[in-house]
Image (cartoon, chains in turn blue, cyan):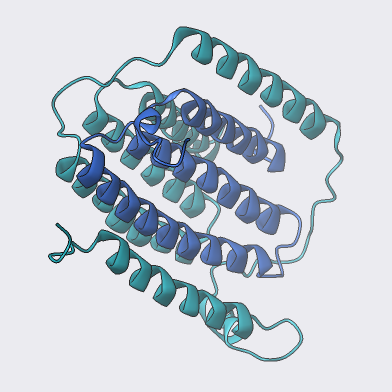
Amino acid sequence: MKDIGLTHFLIVSTMLFFIGVYGFLTRRNMITMLMSVELILNACNINFIAFNKYLFPDKLDGTFFTLFNIAIAAAEAAVAIAIIINLYRMRKSIDAEDADMMRS
Amino acid sequence: MSASIIIFYILAAVVLGGAILAVTSPKIFRAAIYLLFSLIGIAGLYFWLNYEFIAAVQVVVYVGGIVVLIIFSIFLTAGSGGDMRDPLKVRALFAGLATLTGYCLTYYVIQRTEFVVGTQPSIGSNVNAIGAQMLSTTEHGYLLPFEVVSMLLLAAMIGCIVIAIKTRTAK
């Protein structure tokens, strides 16, 4: 059994990314779609930290990218949930297929 | 096989198992709880890598903030008891095919690439260095992105209030 290297982390984050993509493509409820987006963003953060740890351990740039990513993800989640709650007030539903006000 | 390797595999199993259950569970509240476990596992991976500051931020912002916000919005909108509608069969099939293809392609590229591993001592958990570099205005400082993110958070906060506020004058 060899030591845990960068490749292990990259494979874990790739799996997490594509699980998130699968959820985003198949879910019909907007809140669960938002949860899939959070999984995708977290896969990206794992990549940043793993590259920083294994390839450039004397620098901090991956850490900063991850911190800014987390801040932007929090802002995105807050705005998305505000939109979802507003949509629920208008339509009494949070299915993505019922949000068709801008069609036709 | 040392304990650290076993801990890595346990953490990876928690992260991936939680993620799979979060995107397939038919009950929305359970999906949110599985997402919580997945995010805690990711914080554990950061601890495993000795990035304690990032792990703490992950726990505070994701587990303490975003998941609680998602659970509140579930209570405000969908209710937590009933099952959600199943995904369309044909859509699930093609999404599975697309993600499997993408995963195989990425796996192939990762296995082919030779990474040049750095040998310098790690400074990842040094909070003094993080703070000094984040607020420095020299060549490798991150003061400008820091200020831009603070403006973004302010704009997002005002936007949330404007979007979600109940207008009494309408109707």
